[in-house]
Length: 88
Image (tube, rainbow, N blue to C red; front, side, top):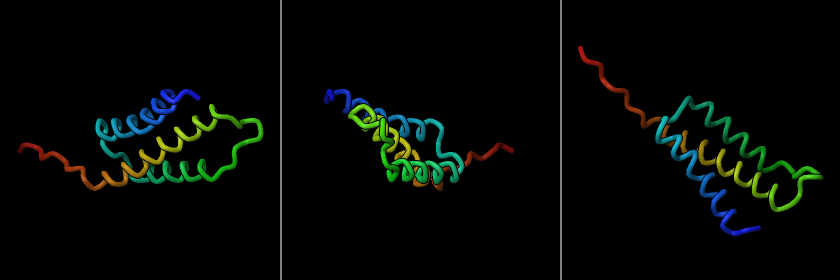
């Protein structure tokens, strides 16, 4: 596996959810909890028989990191949203 490809995939898996959280703020809390549950399910799931190899490891690892960062980041940011006051 090419090292730069691994670094790019994991940088994307870290950067995309952080950018989405910054741009769109935290969504409803249950979406982030569902994301964490999906990441844990994906992490504990055994690799299917025909899906072994470095490409699939990279795919599953990148998806796991993306879902985990989205879930933890959203839950951490959930209470920080301050609504704007409307003018009278």
